[in-house]
Image 1 (tube, rainbow, N blue to C red):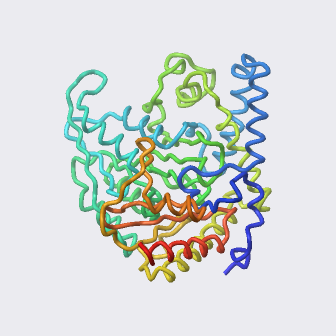
Image 2: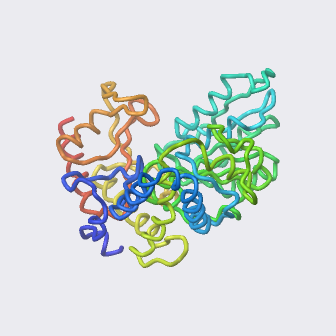
Image 3: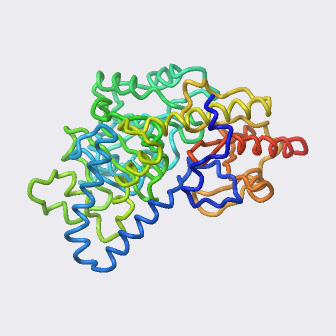
Length: 417
């Protein structure tokens, strides 16, 4: 095991995370390094010093520079890549402009991230397309086992639901609640063979898993840069295969619908200007890739040291927690990346969740870990009550001693729970 994992992280000082909180929840919203936040503020100052010049002349140049560096990083052609605010926004763009016909099915799994699955549910629940021609699209979710024994279980569950009506498969690269790495390469090959389109929800992918999107050859691929690539919040991308480049529209239609920049790909015209906004998160993506490469002295082109460090740490942390909790692993180590779900003891009565908004319902143990033990880590009922799951994440600023403190806290909680 890497000796670095057993020592306080030498990278922690690069982030402005509260030193009084053990932050083991990078997977939810990410965390941005101080140097990149400083760069973002410089760009904001540049914008506010001369807004018209910035928006009309400087922004397009900076955007293309950032996009080109990202394209090289993910193995894509720049003309196939556009920035969006989030994976959820990208999924909306694809599914709400996709030419579904009456009887078509959207196939996903029951581990798909709820917000993105809801876009497919929305398409199924609203049977009129923009031309008001009635058509009914069906939402189908394959049941993936939890715990899971093999990536084959995902493939087999999905294939059991494929039929002549399956038009598009929406699937996580890495599942959000359960932290499984899914066999998307095998799924894409099989769906391409059958003439079924694929939309890969790679919310956690970029910065976590080396990517080569042109080789992968999904129909659509989207990922959040603000998670494992550590860019500012509100930076994500959508990759569209060349044969679909002029058939997918942004969730916000703007000037690019009927105006074109000479020699610009139509995809860029459509997506690059959704209306006046703060675009500095997009402009920081290329700078963040360069920052992380310099931080880790990693010129691999894929930030392999980042992915390997986080992978090694999550394996060590899961082993530690499973041993301390006497908990069976919910998936093989081959399906781990930088996230891991840990099965906690079943609950004896339904929990009283603490609601803040539609996407925020905190379990009492989550709240107690934060308030009493100063540990930020999600705890939730998965797949349903009374089953209880804790999900840990590993990023450069974490070290193994933090998971040991989590184990100590859980020992106290469940000894008296």
